[in-house]
Image (cartoon, one colour):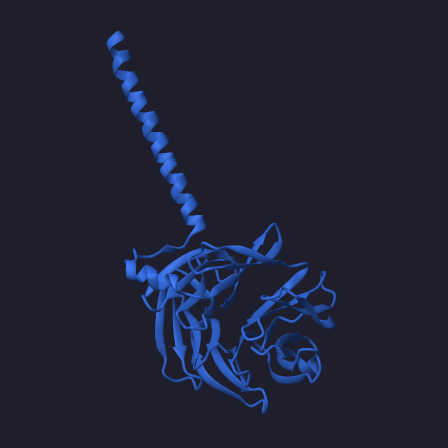
Length: 325
């Protein structure tokens, strides 16, 4: 009996020490995943230096207990900072990269609300339009002086989904386009002269370009697969398509005329939303939603570092607003 005890005690000590070491290592690695970017492949020293030279910050939406906040972070995920907390927000639009304003709609319940902006440099909040019915989509031009938005109407003579443009004070409102099927996404050209939007037509998703002066519309691209993201960056239009059979998303680019289609990245087992490109074109951010039901939920922020062709993961978010220096 005495010999058995002598054998059991060392075994117990080994098990306890092993469990302590495993837990310590697991907890440390867990903290690291929460506080920094995780790359899909190990970086060389030169690649690490290239990533560190990125001068732009990414802004995105985080929600906890029903409270939506704007988060600022560097692309490595090591300088996370809460910059603004929304009050009674029901729709968040885009980041206007020149004016540095985020446009949003604030309301309580189904009552008319207000179109507002928050400037991400001086954190000034402005009310642009009061007593405004809730739009389905809203986007501000890069200069911050025009808005596009969509709404749905049951009225017979104006039935369906309508895309409008107006000045940022609500004046000079013009109808751009109307159809029975949904209008899904809107993105502005950098100079503010054109917009692109996604329309659902029959079973296709189409990218349509509109000149805001003439209001002429032109279909520049059509797909029998769902287009889930749209972003116009300089001379390229970025978008993602989802193949339901293969369960993959592919990020593409085309030029402003819908030509020169190129694949940028393939993402397995995920829906890709909210593509945003940094001003220096070094980083492409997007949300990977691993719930393939098609319902929009929180996704994983992923950043493609184009100079080194490496992909990293940041954290979960509801929306990516974009990049600013």
